Image 1 (cartoon, rainbow, N blue to C red):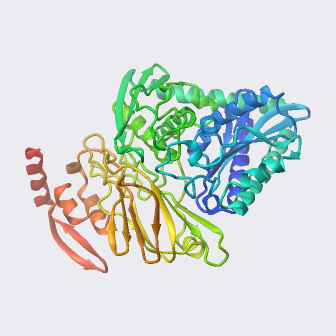
Image 2: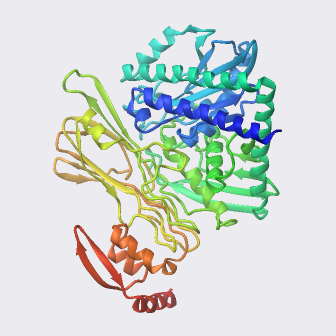
Image 3: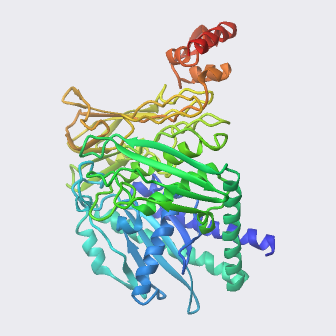
Length: 585
């Protein structure tokens, strides 16, 4: 294969998917897509469903998960006579498409003449799908039907004919029908952007060359992933972690993982993981596989992600566990469960390749939804706030501060847009000091925010990581725990499930306060560079008490500078104090 042609085709395929991402983000009506980028696009093999290319602006967990979704749709379409030009399939069934009901997947076939060449697919988060809680995050749900309407794989377009009846049915069951119709139209229209780019490639290179390039790109990704896996020492590496509760029963849920490395193959075995939860802390097995691959991509970022990168892996996921949900189990906690899969993959592989693997990131999306009716027209509003938090430290650097979850790039909705759209006022949105785990390379800090309601509303929160904090590795410390608080009628209140609260009624003047975890620390805090401690102190990322107690420094002087201080350490006294702390340890 001519390397120049291969490179140009690869870049062109990625650019097509990127363009689709950006067009949807710009065209979408709802802020969950236009503000937080809660979407994804990809191109897939028409027969195997393997990923060919993917956009770089969407959520990583969708990009991996859509391969499994496309494979499910291929099976259904084949049973119904196969794909036809002008067809467009849609699905949100979480047991087939993964994630939760709000994530709707569209699949569109691409033909060259009368031959099926590939499949485009996209995912978009719809702000409301009905159900008992506006927005879909229902911490006390005990079955899927309490979370919204299920869409099995069906044709939205049948050879170009629009299925208006099914759209009317969906719209009749949601709280934000106009937003839904706008987002659906944007998702459908963006396929024209993808086809335009693919047709230009066909015209330049022809079908045979494109197919050869795609096969070569997949093979090279497989070879590259296998080369990295082969460098991991053979063996079995285990990890355990827990969820605080499932939102219904206040008991922890175990996630168990054993990763076996054999040559260039990886086996992920989740035997020992808790059975299906009564509450919504469940995900499908396809999503579990996807998050393992997302974790690998964080560790080996140089591997181009396509179907070839997935080939060296195989999985054992116990049926009817929290990682292999089946009907009618609720799955609204998907946004948090996926984070723990990443955590245990990191924890297991850190035992084998600590030089490449970071400590645990913040581990909870902590979604808060604020809903009610506008005073003017009585229409519904639904505001959604996914948490940013800290990443774990690594051998080469501190953890990322205020980052999106590892499986997501869903950003925090802008304060200005929120105050414009919804009856609330933000009181603060800031970096949470002392939230990153102490270490030679500290964990990144989480964030803290709070708002005051300007009218009657209902608030639901679905998060985790209060009882079980993100852990450090190689001697690093744990991060701060999640913290969720309300102030209702002048009284402070913490939900019984700590970070899960279902349909809490608030009035004007009531407040919500949220503080996300940071990431775990990497390495002994007493080995941290003194200049780095000073920088953290001056930036307000750590307090003086943590600097002294965790990092063993002695502060010679602290000069006020605005709302902060400029610190000077005593190097000799700090070295002596650290020596004493090591002896005591």
